[in-house]
Image (tube, rainbow, N blue to C red; front, side, top):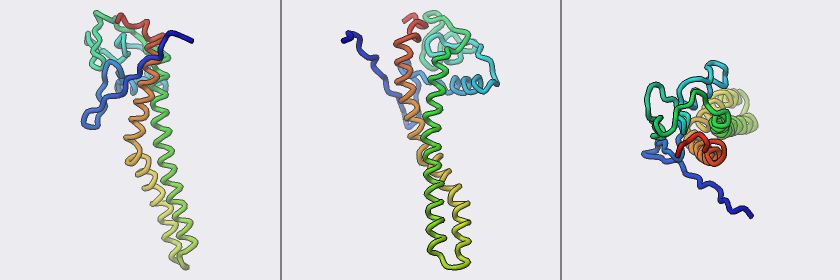
Length: 178
């Protein structure tokens, strides 16, 4: 048996329903967007980033996400590949939940349309086709965007926190002076 214990996994912090980045879970929406642009080939992987969490620094000497200073942990000029994969995995997790919910709404509307076709008399079956088109669209939007989006975001942040802790415990820990 190993005497090393697994790294403790901090949970994302929420205030009034909004995520608040902490040193333990330093998710940066700016970095998330930047990584998406880099992965799409629309931006280079170069800049000035926090040495602890890789959030964009610009000309600042302290990170607005994790609070680290460049005196304590020097800034880096590239985003770590493993960290970029963690951010990408978070987006994929959120997308999985949202797409599954949207398709559930579309399939539910399709099922209801089929029932309407089976049970409505004569020309009123036209309403079933209209419901299929409009109901499928609105059910997909409601289930995917309204109903599940907050849950998907929280699930993505929890997965980010877990993978962040693992990354910090391995190669990411070498980047920080603390």
